[in-house]
Figure (tube, rainbow, N blue to C red):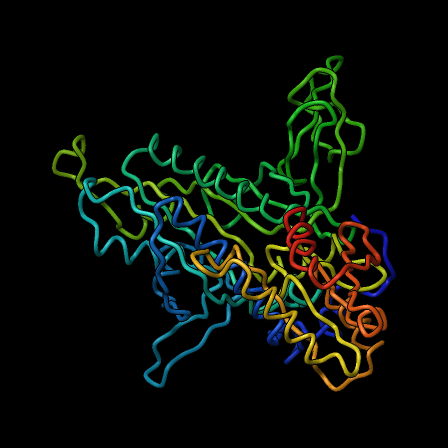
Length: 429
């Protein structure tokens, strides 16, 4: 985690033109923010396809009667609730377990139609009492939900572990530290779950880990090594230095973090109550409830959580995989035409016969602003690579290349070497 000025991430995202606040706990995404979101979504699509998942889009409105059946309407303090003109009661979905279970229960009737894996990227709603942290705790947020359906517990657990591995591979794409912690399932239900966290000094969660073995847990579920001299269980909260419950010599560490993903093995928590049942070889004449899992990634939270780790005194800093643009070209007055030529060289590189992710995603800052202002703004926005056409360009046709992530403050190169240099730097990011 970077040491930086005291300006909070929310303010940085606003100043950089990524988001704007609409109302308390509600934010608009501006063009740069939307590009970041769309890049995360495309990466999610790739990993969901790898799991054999199909994409759906469920309604944001859910019936209160479904939530009554599942037993979750009783915990209604954070639900946005409404009635239509006929008095029918609805709510804005904070999550979609009830709706997806009802949908699949209406369509699937045999184990031969399973396994089934469905996912969506959709807006969710929660009536937060005290919204804070910008996109970290807002009243409207974007999430990816994956729902899995299997006919045996063993196959459902196999699916669960496959999703965990896919999530880990997905988060490795961002090339920032992340933690996978054993977790309590909360009101979602089920008896097996794991959280994915980005470590951050301003994180609201505390993650407990061992300094010797692979034990990692969230604070609510964490335990400590029993005291061998006492026959009574130690129910006190875990603190730094307590003995690890999984190994003989490890000590527990505690660090703040931001949750950005969660996997749950639900079993029959929803399928039993909502009557999503199938015929199986062992069921006889009585259908059995489907084994389920649900797995979420907080896309909005990622847009706020990554800067919590990477932002520095100059501004935001984005991993290449989610940056609004990989390269920004900043020309001084009089170099605009040359900037367009350089843009064409970078933007068209490798486009013939290549996948979009193999091309260079560049933009020119051609706004009518002072040159120095645009340089500072490029740092504030956090583009991975900045190409500057300044005095050296006007004099010797040499441009400056900057890359904060790699510690490159300024390197001058000839025009003919720009493509090779930029491509080489991007390959290292």
